Length: 159
Image (cartoon, rainbow, N blue to C red):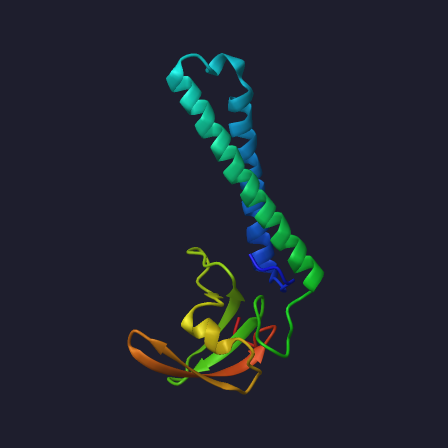
């Protein structure tokens, strides 16, 4: 996680909030098993108890990370609409004429095909650009050129 407040898109905020709820639920389950006095008996049970304690530490750290990131996103306000950054919605026209709209995010999600991470080749090329700027980036198939069509809401008919 970054230490500077960075904007966060609505979709990313919802995903982080859902993950936070899931991790809190998992933590409650692990904590309940840890508090159960009937679970400790022999050395194997003690090892299980230590493993659950380690798991609680891991879950607590993730809860702290998620809470921090959500707070940073709230402090930073909405993503800029004049310059591409993390949290931006960007519409791009590729050299072949296809037009696609992406969200620039921090973490990839297999379920969100419109998310481009800020550390991917396309994400790095788009960061700091404005509408009308051309970008060029490397792919396994070679160099690709694209033009930033707009930031913010996709153009009419492009949703």
